[in-house]
Amino acid sequence: MDDHLEVKDITIDRAAGTLTIVFGDDAIGRYELEALRVNCPCAGCRGARDRGVAPWPPAGRDDAKLELADARLVGAWGLGITWGDGHEAGIFPWEGLRRWHDDDEPRLTPEMGDKPPP
Image 1 (cartoon, rainbow, N blue to C red):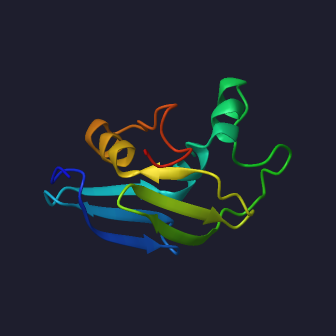
Image 2: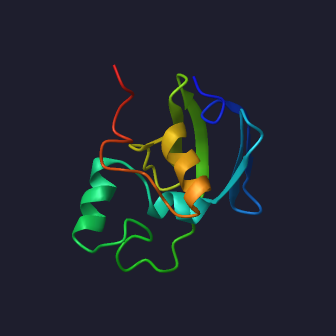
C-alpha cells in the first residue's frame, strides 16, 4: 500500500464532531461528522443525492441529532461507520478520504463505498 493511503491513526472526537486520520506520510485529514454523513458513499445515499435529496438530516427532521454510534475497520480498505439513526451501509475507503483531504472537498466516487475490492 502507498504511504499516502496507509493509515497510522484514527481519532473520533464526538464532542467536537470530527474524525481525524493520520495517513502514512503524516498528512492529517480532518472530517466533520456531518459532512461524512451527508457524503455517505453507499448506494442509497448516492441515489438520494442524485435525486437532489440530502441523505441527512431525514426529510422533515431538521432537528435530528447526528450521532456516530460506532466505527470499525473494514480490512485495510476503509472505515465502516454506524450512525445513531442506524444507518451503516456506507464504507468510507481510505483512497476517497485521502482524495477528500488532498482536494479539500468530498471525493467519494460512485464505485467506492459499497464493498471492498476483491
